[in-house]
Length: 320
Image 1 (cartoon, one colour):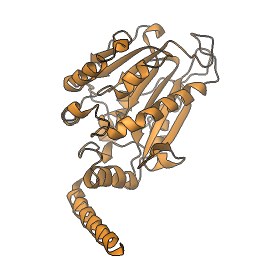
Image 2 (tube, helix red, strand yellow; image 1 turned 30 degrees about the vertical axis):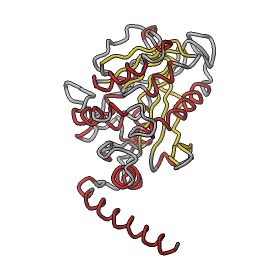
Image 3 (tube, one colour; image 1 turned 180 degrees about the horizontal axis):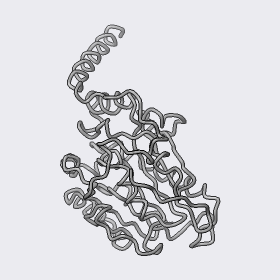
């Protein structure tokens, strides 16, 4: 038994060495994150400045996810970790909304429990959008994605359930910048979600600023992303993608990861309150679990609540 264990360990170390060599050009290029207090008041790094014609679509990212479209709803396939993460997404949203202490201006309740409107940005194959549409507290879910191939899979899967017909669940081939701007709070949403999306766009500050415009007063902008640390590169890029292959290789670019301090800095001093950050860790055999402090080294959820009427407000989320 000891010999078998030793040989297995040796084989793993050899595989790690080979993977590390192949990843050398993609390894982290910096040891520390930018100071969060420098955002968004000072200029963003060149790679994060919004262009004159902003687009949240990166062709390489779209091509990668198109290749995964056919297996999106396979709970044991490449999207397995997203399926396992989905229940925790809903738990996080419930905790965010129940934490609101200021009465909701549209329902006279601090925690409205019905007729919620969702906007799911970067919905992919619809794992979160479908589950949100099935909740008894949901009025409607609008789910958008720039990939026709992935949306085709999402629509086909939703057609299996008659209860998910529009307007309960409506898929649109769109991006946040091509959606018609809301003309009033009635056009906005109670929950705007960007799960596993922010780390796939080139200009995250401008992207979030556009998303924020669709959140009604008292509503929440929620999402998930990954901290930009050496440990996150080791676990998500090297181990998860290159060694264990539980995530398709090429899914993540470490240089696009975002620390929770950066996020807080982008929203600080604006009309957002109740900032919530929750670190999560994938535990083999158990699934995703909340782990306090893990937001500093890996995956985490985030939520920001837009101030209601009568609350203190600052300036809207600024361009970097």
